[in-house]
Amino acid sequence: QPEASLARPAAVLSMQGVHHAFGKHDVVQGVDLDVAPGEVVCLLGPSGCGKTTLLRIAAGLEVLQQGRVALNGGDIAVPHGRHVPPEKRNVGLAFQDSALFPHLTVLENVTFGLKGEPPRERRRRAVALLEQLGMAGYVDVYPHMLSGGQQQRVALARALAPAPQLMLLDEPFSSLDARLRDRIRDDTLHVLKKVGAATLLVTHDPEEAMFMADRIALMRDGRIVQTGTPRELYCTPCDPFVVSFFGEVNELTGEVRNGRVQTPVGTVGAGWLAEGSQALVMIRPEALRVVEREAPAAVHRYSHVIMAKLLGRSSLLHICAHGEDGREAHLHARMPGVFLPADGQPVDIHLDLSQVFVFPSGVAGAGA
Ligand code: ATP
Image (cartoon, rainbow, N blue to C red; front, side, top):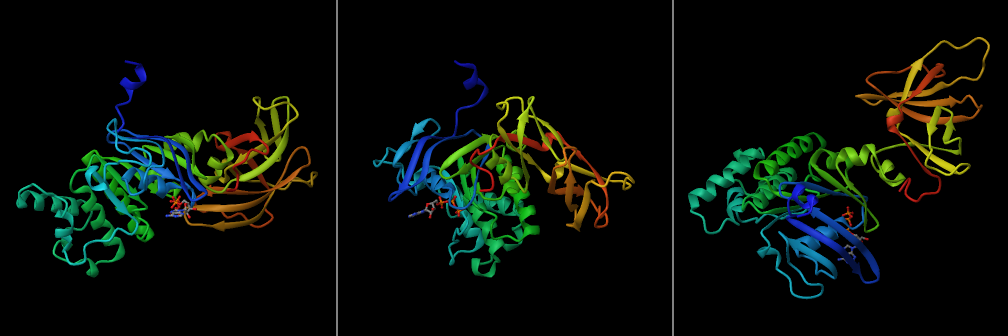
């Protein structure tokens, strides 16, 4: 046995070389993706990049056009041919608009898929799940009496109840307001980990993906751009698109000289880029540490604050930075807590290089 296969258990879901087109529109273009037992993988990406289509192919709700889809190592679909129907895949589905059965109570909705078990056991299992998702008090209520967020939680419990080997979740928290969403995400993650379900979760929200995922697969235009742990994607992004997907970023350009690029806020290593080429320097607002200082009497050019705004847990500063080379740049800096220097306040700026990323200028990806 090769070492890699010993280290990583066989995938519950494995997709290889999957392509999908609607008419002439190629929506999924050669995707490889595995979900290991007990692992939560988030498919993350902007609207329209093909996340939902990929999930629907895994569920069997879209016909496989090209590639392989396997559950526990066994193919479940032949391109344009025979496939195991969705209800026979032992897969739990919860979609954004998952409808509950309107004529059944919450408890009956959740026990619906639990065939072949004594009624008492079915009820026990359903009530336990509803409790874990904060819905214990609604067992005998009908769906129309619930809020959208409560209905989503019941849909999640219904999908989890048969203890499926694989959970496929499409934006399952989208209709929850911000405060409730944090709690339900937390509860859902606990349930998924307790049940040990392999999970593929679609979201367009990077923070949600970072919270939920063991691994994130970031998609763009039908392709996976980078797969890795949240930390890998955030700290070692493979291209400008990945950097900018995780939040606002300052972009500067400069020429590579002696393996370095000079910017108005400091010098950055770029030894792997061609000497004399143009580099794109991406600086997260958190990378700029701003310190108030006295205005020097003799030198007129110094960095200063243009405007400072309190955002709550952090403060956003619009800074005009002056480099030693005389270049000037307007940048956003984010400082923790309440830090509101006056407009025009002279400042020193320190650069945290762990939050700075350098790419060849002209690489596709930034700002999408
Ligand atoms: P969102 O986050 O907005 O749901 P997504 O990343 O999940 O986006 P998909 O829903 O997979 O993206 O859609 C990808 C592309 O395929 C979009 O351009 C969409 O308009 C198109 N598309 C999706 N379903 C169909 C369909 N049944 N027929 C034709 N085009 C479709």
